[in-house]
Amino acid sequence: MSKENKVNLVIERTFRATLAEVWDLWTTREGFESWWGPQGFRADVHAIEPKVGGALRYDMVADSPEMIEAMKKMGRPPSHPTTARFTELSPETHLVITNVIDFLPGVAIYESTITVDLTAKGDRVQMVVILSPMHSDEMGQMQKEGFTSQLTKLDRFA
Image 1 (tube, rainbow, N blue to C red):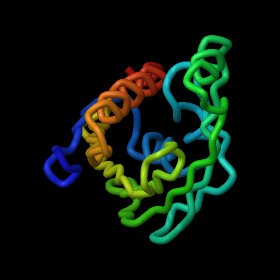
Image 2: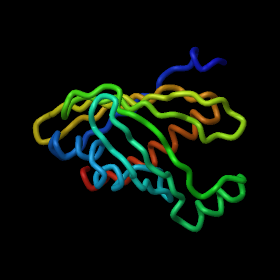
Image 3: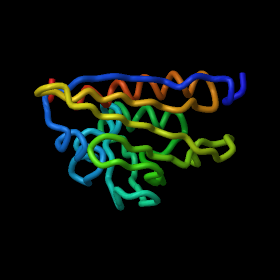
Image 4: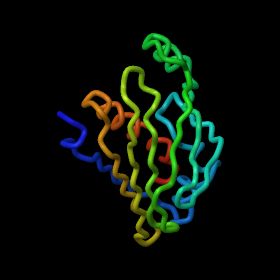
């Protein structure tokens, strides 16, 4: 099945937080680093410029002994640089991050988007994240598991 025929992955969560607090998780170094990456990984941000066309560059780093060993067994380095840019932005309500997928051996470089919509609901914020499809079903499943895992880092807002 080609990437064009695959469906987006939609993930919804509601947090006891303000729009500004959730927005900062996506648009500040401290916020992004506090939760980005599945359990056993972290993101070391080098640039985050929350404006249309602004850069988002970070290293995804395996930071637990189990993940470092898993990466080693897959023949992959324990960290890799990630390049992205903000392609849409409406402060505190909507953003799109376009990632360059250039770190998979044997896979042609392509782009993948993350769309985030935030809505205030009383003392809570509903976050709807839409992840564009990956190049294969296997990578799509890894994407879903990884994103779901990293969301557990936000349980402090439950």
